Length: 331
Image (cartoon, rainbow, N blue to C red):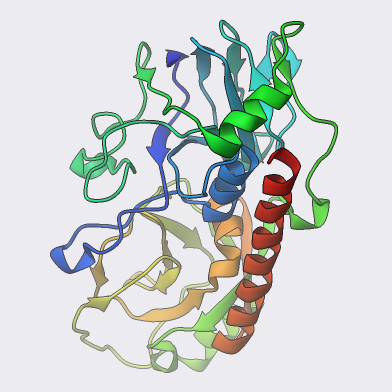
C-alpha cells in the first residue's frame, strides 16, 4: 500500500482509457501522455496498460508501506527519496517505510508513477482511469487527497523478478546502472513543434487563417485542462458563417469556436463537437501536447496521414524492442 501524505496539484489514477463507450457519451479519458505512461509500465515489468499515478505541475508526497518497484516517466517533477534525487526512466526499488516526494515541474508538466503489479483500484467500464467530472474510476472518481491509501496489486512473473533483482537492505532505494536509449526520450521544452494533419473543415477557413495556422505560433492558455488546451494567437476565421452538425471528435482534434481561438481536445474530451476543425494532431506528438503548460509556445507543421502512420509504426517498433529487452534482462 501507498499512503498519500500530501497531494500534488492534480494527482489522478490513469490507465490506457475507457474505450468502447463513446457511443453512449462516455469519454475515453486515460493518460494524457500515453507514451510516458506505457514506458513507465514497461520499466517495472507491467504489460503497459496498468494504472499509474498521473501528476500535473506539482507532485505529491507518498509513503510506501511495503517494498515496491517503481518507475517515473514524463516531465521532471524533481522526485526525491530521503532528499536524494530519484532517477527517471528507470526501474527503482523503494524500501518499505520510504517517502517519495515530488516538487514543482522544472521540465514538461506531467509525470507518471508506475508500480510493479499496478495500482489495484476498482475497474469501471473496463478501465481504472479517473474521470473527475463524472466522478467515476480511479479512487472514488476524484483526485488524490491526504490520507488516501493506494493498494498495490500482487506482482508475479517479470515484475516480481525485477523486485528481487533490485532489492536492497542498505538504502532507501536502488536503481540499475543502465538506462534506455536517450533517443527514445521526449525532448521537453517550452516551445514545441507539433505535426498536424488538415482537419475535415480545413477548406472552410479563409486563406489568411490557413497561412497563420501554419506560420505563426500559439500560446497555451492557463484555461487549459485535461479536457482541452485553449491556445491564443492569430484569430482564425471562416470564409463565411457556417452551421455545422455535431460530429465525432478525438484526442488532438483542433476546433475553432466563433472567437477564433483554437481549442485542442485532449484525453477527457467530449465525444462529439460542432465547431469546425482546422487540424488533427498526429498521435506521435501527443506527448508534446501533454507536456506543454500555460505560457508554452506551439507551432504546427503539416504532415499527411501516411507520414503520421509511418512515424507511429517506428515508435511502436521501438517500444516493442524496449519491452523485449526488459523482459530478456529480468527473465
